[in-house]
Amino acid sequence: MITLYQFSTSPFAEKVRRALNYKGLDFEIREVGRAKVAQGDYGHVSPTGKFPAIQDGDTAVWDSTDILYHLEAAHGGPSLIPAVARDAALAHAIEEWADESLYFYEMTMRLTWEHNLDAALDEFARTLPAVPKPQLKTLIVEATTQLTRAQGVGRKPRDQVVADVERHFDALDALLDGRSWLVGNALSIADLAVVAQVNALRYAEEAQAALARTNQVSGWIDRVDEAAPK
Image 1 (spheres, rainbow, N blue to C red):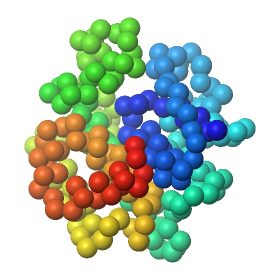
Image 2: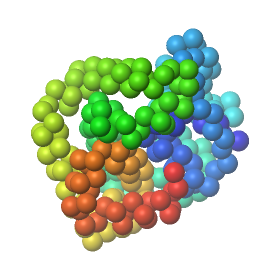
Image 3: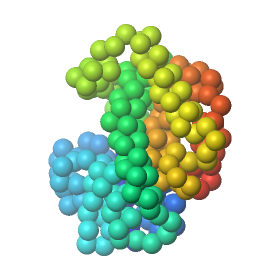
């Protein structure tokens, strides 16, 4: 039995859950106590304090990408990595785009723009029940703003962030034109990484409007949901 340690609010945890479900693997979920991470309570599975992490027998793996490659190497089921080398390289590049670019847009729009954070606040409150919601909202905005400003997206004017996301969604729509999956003829790590970030972005009303302009993305989300439930 695989144990998944997660923050339920994390798109990277969604990415891993979908991979586990796609491969048909048995797993249990343990929600990480945010306040306990700094105390070292989860050091046995994630010495860096990064989550999601899994315990698979005697093996602990943290970082969502490393987890997916571990599942591919250690378990059967449908493959997450395209067999053709060029397709595998493209899937890797698209996964990195999702994890390292789309991620900062979803954090900026979902967690630092207060009108969007309101839609996600209850989910975060369940992971920190001792913190009053007004205080929690302030903590999330301040911490995420510091992170996204350091990365760069958080320093952009809001209209520029929205324009960027529109271009990202237009690019995603073009990648899906005439095909069912982002790479090759089957679901891959690219689809799992991107759909998780898109779902996080959908908390933002501005991203919802951008998504509504696309022609292919909603149908692709439905296909991923069917093949790899979250």
